[in-house]
Amino acid sequence: MKYVDEFRAPELIRKAGKEIRRLADSKRHYRIMEVCGGHTHAIYRFGLKDLLPENVELIHGPGCPVCVLPMGRIDDGLSLASQSDFIFAAFGDMMRVPGTHGSPLEYKARGMDVRIVYSPADALKLARNNPEKHVMFFAIGFETTAPSTALTLMRAKMEGLHNFSVFCNHVTIIPAIRAILDSPDMRLDGFVGPGHVSTVIGCRPYDWIAKDAGKPVVVSGFEPLDILQSIVMLLRQLKNGESKVENQYKRVVPWEGNSAALRAMAETFELRPYFEWRGLGFISQSALKIRPSYAEWDSEQRFTMPGVRVTDPKAAQCGEVLKGVLKPSQCKLFGRECTPEQPVGALMVSSEGSCAAYYNYEHRKPVSIANAAAN
Amino acid sequence: MCLAIPGKIVELDSHNSQLAIVDVVGVRRKVDLGLLQDSPPVPGDWVLIHVGFAMSKISEADAIDQMNTLTMLGEAQAAIEEVRGYGFGDDDDDLPLQGQPGQRLIQ
Image (cartoon, rainbow over all chains, first blue to last red; front, side, top):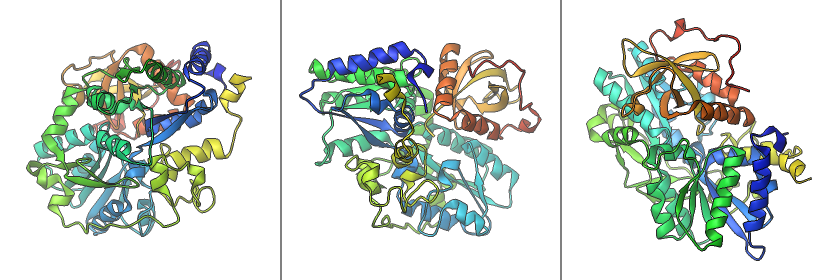
């Protein structure tokens, strides 16, 4: 339970709330998508929805890496690493994500060598320390995480470390936004742009959303005030009939991005022709694969992967929730068969998944901050 | 996974110029500076860290705000555990886990 007064600059937060009410035309219904799962988490955690008028609706986007990963990729990684001389290394977020025959944690309980790492560099060290084993790092994430994997691949090559490979599941945010805008059942008015992805890619890659699709984009920080200010900036553009890219998170995000990070990605990765996303289906040029010059450190080029494709459990409606067509609570399994303790779908696992966020902060209904602020 | 952790560069690694010791509310660990090679940080600079790699330089005031955001999000403990979990520096096990009392990052 949080109250506005606990936040930095509560006066400014109240002001932003008022400004949103002033700018929002009562005859219009606004649908604004926050692309990043970190924003989704913050919005629920802070109860920011309650500060918004009813006609300003926030739609949760696809920016939760473990949520959009199709189950077949998890099955593939687990299947390869089930061999006795393998170590399966992944971030903690991945550990409870269900595959067809269980999550990495359940595989660990059955005897597989599964390690949680906090950095791809830790996976590299595991390989150094376990020369008799092959360490497979299960890489996931958008452009925030991909440069770290890229540098790790470069270090592995430089060291000539041959018992290490990356199973690359990195995805890129722009094609996902394009797929959502192309989706016939989706109507959006603007985007709260991802904060930390933009530290890497900068703000230019969003230009087409503003220019060609005519939707404003505001790259945002993660504090309550950041998110509310971004919504103010979006509503102001909409009121003035503008659509441009603005950067609310200037204190961290340079307009041009991080060129060293982009160079590392260009050195090690190329675009896949297409990649399957949970809920969004196959999206062309939406994911990264490892370049042939790093084939020895690419699990997919070095080993034979089963290439499994599995559909999600029928009753789970992860896809509709990911696209923003359904709210988490409208899924038939939500809060009954599917809970954070016993997740059926990945959206219930990660703190950035909209189902977990909705379950933890909305479903259990603590007194929200903003109720208190409105009173 | 998307939230970045603020830390202060304490010391550059004398053996490996790509590594530096950072301090995150008293927890000291090595992080990789490779993504900031165009404008390498020096001791005293504040950086945002993501999965063991410094991603961007920030001001001290923004570092404090960022840690407060993590605290409000209920993620500060997870962030500190993450930093504590970084183990890719050769001598990480010798680094003191707890810093001096009176750390002022979490306010």
